[in-house]
Length: 117
Image (cartoon, rainbow, N blue to C red; front, side, top):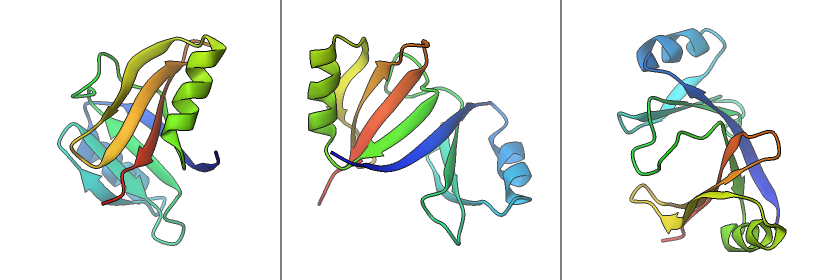
């Protein structure tokens, strides 16, 4: 399993203001579902930030997202380790398969892979 990208998740009800602020640093909006917006660097597309008001399909809003090439392997590794699974592995309508796990410091991590069509 390999990591494809790591993305901070900012909890905020001020999505437009956040988009404008990070735009000053060169980020552009690349996705907006109303409750989650992703900003990316045009020159380095894997450099991203998500702004989330509240997670629409999970019981908590994560602190960070980690995209891996094999979310099934990541899920199995976390379960085998005894880590707390906060949100079970599932397919989401926007094209990802994900689960949430709590890290040793209490942060909730969204671990995901993009589904292939």
